Length: 113
Length: 113
Image (tube, rainbow over all chains, first blue to last red; front, side, top):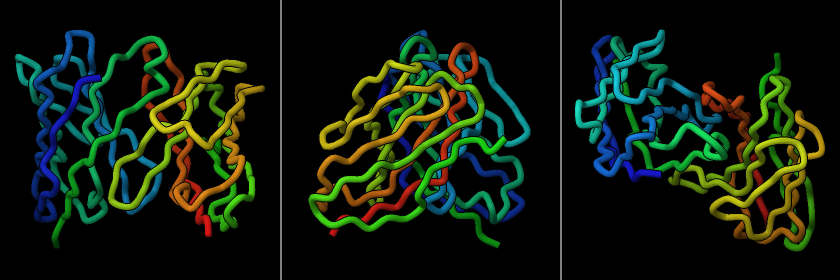
């Protein structure tokens, strides 16, 4: 699985958009970008994933650069409950990799009132 | 649906004791995994399973055993607990195929004294 690099921490004001970057310059053509978050030592929660097109769901948007070497997770209107550790994970979505996720250190997002 | 259920939530063991951490899912997922999370770190994969009767080692398997006799259950056994196994343990499951979202349990906080 490709290695990812994320900033260790970020701040965001409540109600503003939170933009969390992730660098994955060694990503392969068949590897997807996944985002999970972990709120206060709870089990991680899936947010979104994508291959090369931008993706949006009810939680967030994922913007992947054209060369796929980096991506940005966007929380459009951050709330205090979005304060969490955000993990960017790159992996192949096939075979036995379904059961395996490689977590890095993640980004601690703190949303301020 | 209960999702992924882990028991117990908290456990204190003495060095050398054995115990089993339970994990059950009611989503008929093929893929199940165990992770451990040490303070200030991301999750690390211990063991995983791609279906009943099939298990494999992850990144940090030493000191742990697993078996998968049913689709629903994936217990993690500590044969002889050591202080280095003090950690928070998370179980996860996923459907596989095109559905690669992993669902995590709420964790078991284990202390070995």
